[in-house]
Image (tube, rainbow over all chains, first blue to last red; front, side, top):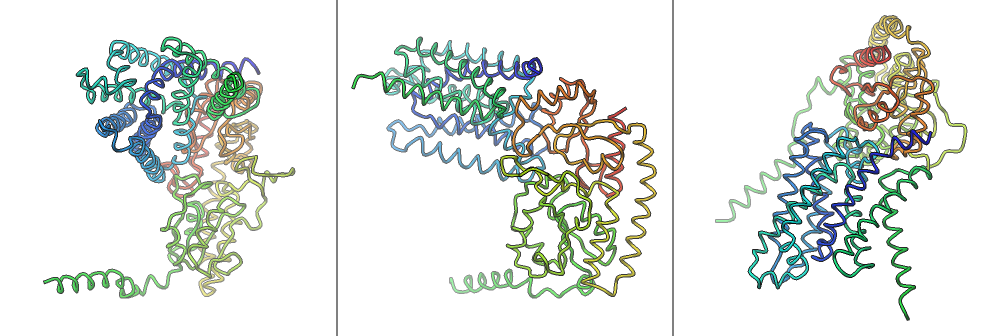
Length: 274
Length: 310
């Protein structure tokens, strides 16, 4: 029985590691830019795109579905980049919030027209980690590695704009252009992840490991390391919990992230001198 | 000159709102009984009994999961105008009660003459013996409600429908009975063919995604194995799936059957581990292309089962 369990969970676990790798890094940017909701909004837009394709008869496995998800996400990225106000007059979070709500409701409307509606929506929320195949893990790993390389090459403008946008403007960087590149590559990651892991998991992988990194380390190198170790560690624990406690995998991972963050926060609080 | 525009606008508005009331009732249509069935299976069976004397509509579409239907206003409109409502019962279509409430049609309230519970008098399988609560997901609290796909149930179901129709139009009893007899004769004839197709596989175990096909299996001598979605509506846990895979390997179960709206990818993953095949069965009339009538649907299921078990 354990061998069957192992055989079943091995690929989902590898997938979690791949997700940790890219998402923990991207999470730092998201938190630095203070647009935490952006990834859940883009993830939801990607899910909406996949749902639209679904309605037209294209299963999640097809390239058309991926193209639709990506197309919508790029559009969303464009909107988000264009609505970034220099003077911060309009809260970016407000725009993002509306985008999220509308794409979520839109997906419900679309899903209602399709026979698989409810199942599809649930899959988009908590993902379908258990049915992931080896070749999918490989494809996603390669894609994320390429995006990682892209971000490494563009690290100067990306980090500058994320951490000190006013200085970026002063230094003459074309902030809108770099923003678009950032959000577009971010969108590709989110589109790919959502189809497998669902909106909630993508959000968790993006935010929680990065938060842990910020709480436990000072410099970016240390923070990244902490984020990756944290992400991988929680994935292991969550997978084990799902197997041993007989819980649905996707939702367990999300809750594990939440719980571990809570514990971490409490421990740090307790350690701080009064 | 705003006045003429305003008058015109009001006139158009009045026309649009009042038009339905002005339309002359189609005399021929008024004679037909307006029947609404909750599922496409019941629609097909009602048409088989009612023939030309009824106008039947279905609330659920053939390719929809009947467990969780989003109730829309258009469904309420259909029920509002209905003379007869045919429900599946056994708590499969509880959502229909929401529609009935919204429709405000006293003819089809529970207990009214305009309501037929198609499950009356049926021998129900899988009645739970232990306490049942929400922690078990959508588990069927009064027994398995998916009886319509068993052709052996057609006789009792059509009898229930006939009684309902006769309550509303007693003078048409001979016509209804003639229709029913003809339909049941066709089913009887096909039964022989179906039984012969599945006879070689008597006793074979089949795994389902959701326990929809239990009645069909029992009718033709197949045995139900486990279900992938142990607690319907709640995603399968890895522990449950690995136990299922183990069972499939030990009992040499070679076939997994799913409904068109299930997570086929998960089913294929499980089948891959256990060395089995996955086949899509029609859970209702209209669920798959090849299954647009009742007889065609059972035919498709029997053929697919036989091919999958070969």
